Amino acid sequence: MREFREEVRNMRISKRGEKLEYEDLCVHPDIDLPDGYKPPKFEMFDCTGNPRNHLRSYYDKLVGVGRNEAIRMKLFIRSLTGDALTWYIEEDLKIWRNWSNMAEDFMERFRFNIEIVPDRSYLEMLKKKITETFREYAIHWRSEAAKVRPLVDENEMKDIFIKAQDSMYC
Image (tube, rainbow, N blue to C red; front, side, top):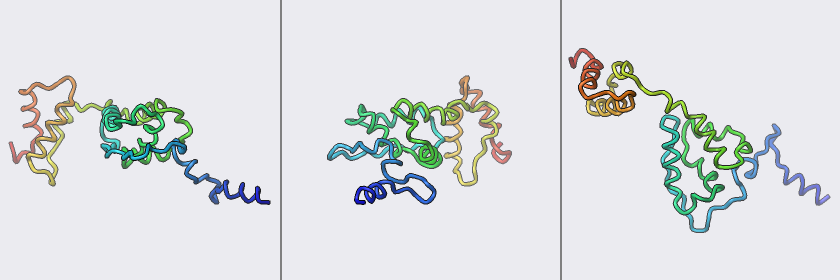
């Protein structure tokens, strides 16, 4: 009878049949962070940036533990927010047998951010928001212009920027 109670206690399955224990919901539940290790403050990825750049930034923050694949996987959730965090939470953790699987899935899911490159017509349509100062708008516009391929030369950039302005500025 005692063994039966122990089995029931260990099962702890929700009313819907879902396993909700730490071991079921955590990637590498058997891995603890080293004593005295304080996880760094990661740059947050929210689905809008370059996923490859995010991985590079993430790796850079893992000084001292980055070679430990299990810790790398365990801490990755701390670098995600918004829809990226939702994606991670909704994935079946069992499909990620190693860091490469996780990183490849991450890249595949958010690759669209680097495949969608602004073009010249996008720059012409990019208008100043009511909440932006003109300086903020100009910096944002220039940042977007730097992403256009092939690159826009300075003279063409000036022409496109002028076309992008509302008639009140022209």
